[in-house]
Amino acid sequence: MIQIHPTATVDKGASIGVFTSIWHYAHVESTAVVGENCSLGMSTYVAHDAIVGNGCRLGNGVSVFSRIELGDFVFCAPFMVFTHIAFPRASVNRHEIFKKTVVGRGVTLGANSTVIPGLTVGEGSFLAAGSALTKDCKDWALMIGTPARHVGWVSAYGEKIPLPLAGEGEWQCKHTGDFYLLRDSMLSRRPGPSDILKYVPGVKLERIKATDSPR
Image 1 (tube, rainbow, N blue to C red):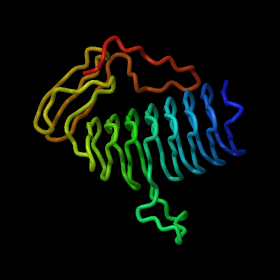
Image 2 (cartoon, helix red, strand yellow; image 1 turned 90 degrees about the horizontal axis):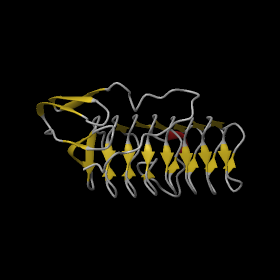
Image 3 (cartoon, one colour; image 1 turned 180 degrees about the vertical axis):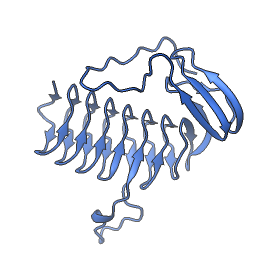
Image 4 (tube, rainbow, N blue to C red; image 1 turned 90 degrees about the vertical axis):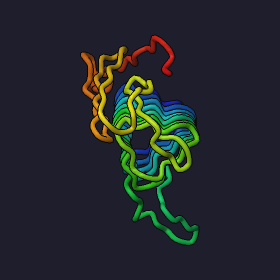
């Protein structure tokens, strides 16, 4: 089942996965791909050749332009912005040279944040509200500020991980059983018994309910 609000426009040739909801005044262009179990909020836009993975949530006013690829379980908070031209000019058409932006699985992009074109946004990373991402970021990195700087780590569940930016350390999430391992300046994750970022195709998604407020 796909739910499309009467005010939304889905152009012929767009691919929409099952259990996806497209809300008021959204527009999905031809050749765009939107996965299963997604929610596209009011006035969202997905351009041709853009890819939105499974289980993604696009808040009100988010535009996913051509050559932007979102992995599974990406959360784009209301009015965050993907830019798609490095040096735009009204008198120059650069549609054929849009840079590719790749957003990893489980990423959160906060409200009113900005991602410049041509970046790779690491798996599970978290860009704080109002921040501007101007360079690639690491998996599980907490990025804050303009330009955004790496200030910590965030788990798949959405809690700050009490490990330094570099060195050695280990931490286990009490909610999911995920195990995080810090080596040098890279953090890796070993999923717990039930991986909350593992997508099961063709099944209606039941998102887990938080048992307390992340700190």
